[in-house]
Length: 85
Image 1 (cartoon, rainbow, N blue to C red):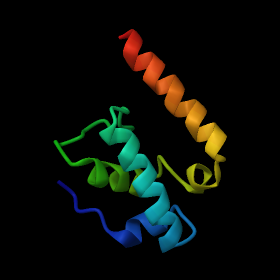
Image 2 (tube, helix red, strand yellow; image 1 turned 120 degrees about the vertical axis):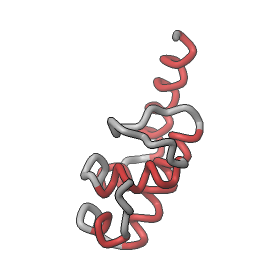
Image 3 (cartoon, rainbow, N blue to C red; image 1 turned 120 degrees about the horizontal axis):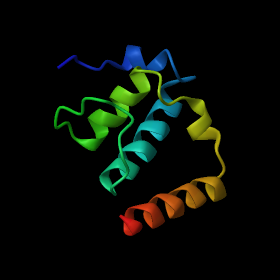
Image 4 (tube, rainbow, N blue to C red; image 1 turned 180 degrees about the horizontal axis):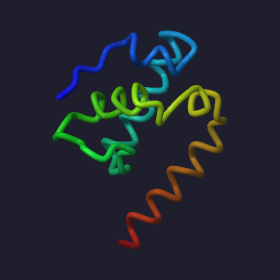
């Protein structure tokens, strides 16, 4: 397993504050049943998966700057989709 570093993640976000906010929001989504954007999860915890997604360039500041309404709508859609399955 490749180690994820803060430096790897900071290449895709504006700063450490944005990194913390993006990673925490994404980790919370993964922990609540959201699917990962990675092909190989390697049984990592949600926080590590979120950081790996950021380091791989799958997430950037767009998630941080999205409005709360957009995030709530996305979460509601994810929940509805998971309930259908």
